[in-house]
Length: 221
Ligand code: AP5
Image 1 (cartoon, rainbow, N blue to C red):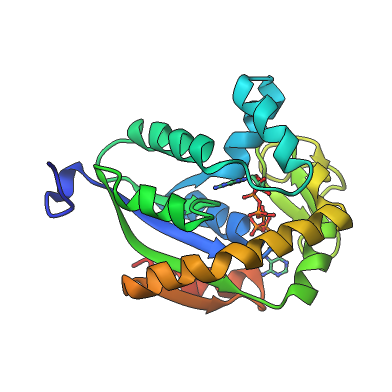
Image 2: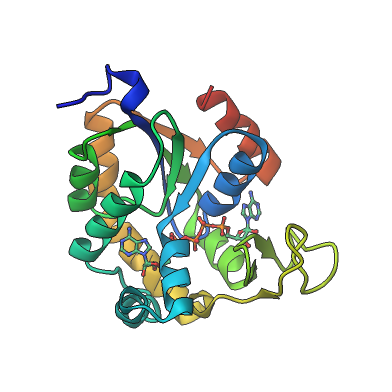
């Protein structure tokens, strides 16, 4: 079996852990725009599947609209398949996976990939409601904006690709509250899992996106 010691065959993974709205997607996109990182977001993959009307999209939509997690069996199959298509030596920022200990274990036993570190984005829930209900995203490329903090240069138009900027269907307050409940129910197990492996880092993300980015650049050197 190939191992991480055989560096040229392994895909390196940095996992972003954190509540909905903590800024995982914003930071991963900033990193992949300026450096060599590949940004993989399970939320984006599922939203694309919904847009394309695939069987995966139809299954995922029933869970996502209610703020529930898509079953582990579906997500583990999806991520293994996605990771198997990457080239050796790529450095992936995994945003939105794992979300349960079962998913973390599946990632850990995946051949040809190695989790370098898990970075936990820490912030109070009270700030997340405002971030999420005010979030707007580009329909085309997924670039996140915010009605107050990170506005596109032209209202309703994405700075990156010119696509239409809209509100996500799971960013209404009742669904946001359910997503936060689920996050808290799962997160402690995940944090303990990576703490035991001694590759957990924590960042306070209640600061401007550029400052968070600087800290991440240091951690990812
Ligand atoms: P997913 O798309 O992964 O959503 P999430 O984890 O709930 O995270 P978000 O995308 O909401 O938040 P984020 O941390 O990326 O924040 P962002 O950068 O956008 O998952 C959606 C659904 O898919 C799940 O509910 C589930 O159903 C399903 N799913 C996905 N993966 C799954 C899995 N592995 N297993 C099972 N189900 C799965 O920022 C938020 C807002 O804040 C933006 O407006 C942004 O502009 C703003 N902002 C960002 N940083 C700052 C800052 N520093 N200061 C001020 N504002 C900021």
